[in-house]
Amino acid sequence: MRFIIMHKTNAHWEAGAIPTPALIGRVGGLLGTLAKAGNLLAGEGLRASSEGVRVTFSAGARSVVNGPFERGNELPAGFSIVRTRSLDEAIEWASRQARVLGDGEVDIRPVTEPWDIGIGSRPAEIVTRRYMVLRKATAATEAGAAPTPEQRADLSRLIEETAAANTHLATETMRPSQRGRRYKNSHNGVSVIDGPFTESKELIGGYVIVSAESLDAAGRLAQMYIDTVEAEEVDVRELE
Image 1 (cartoon, rainbow, N blue to C red):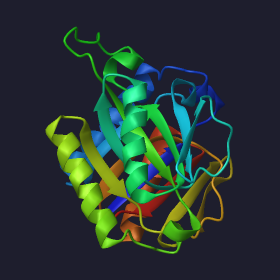
Image 2 (cartoon, one colour):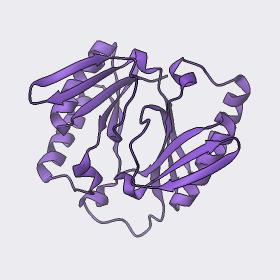
Image 3 (cartoon, rainbow, N blue to C red):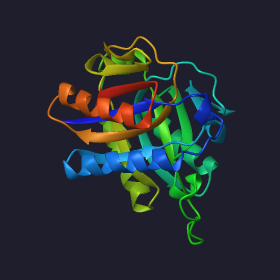
């Protein structure tokens, strides 16, 4: 089974802070441990929401609001990673996806690259940027509603076309939050809350995707993760 472990951001990171060498070292060590054990499948950090946009699709209309984001419904239903030459191109990709999946809200934020946090310089030949297109949960997705066969076919065509152009890199869909867990970190220790999550008002700061045989096993990895990144809140969700 595959699970995503997502840590939530806070004012420190939203202000554009750069991780310390010690934190970078700890995260690198954790990723190495997970990879050696065969658990690690993927992982990324995200830039502050001031570098992104929130896009709402409703009745065929599109509205775009520049970050930083007001906290609202931050419960995710899934995401795509795209590589484009600009944020505007990422918005256009998200718009094509919305024409397939219907109304909803997405956040688009840059994925953190090594040079963003002081590890080396950006290679001169790289003229594109990776962005996460994060789709928000709805009552339908939380109820487990699946796309229609027509929607699946249209989405597959979009992915195939844009993957061939090296634009689409990955897409993941999360199962309803009732199948997940939330870990809250405090000076009293870590408390565990079973889904469903009625709300989530905290933005994602980063994630790892892991292979684990059960939610309990993924939870043990989440405990390691929350200690390493010193996050205040971590969600574990099952992926399709």
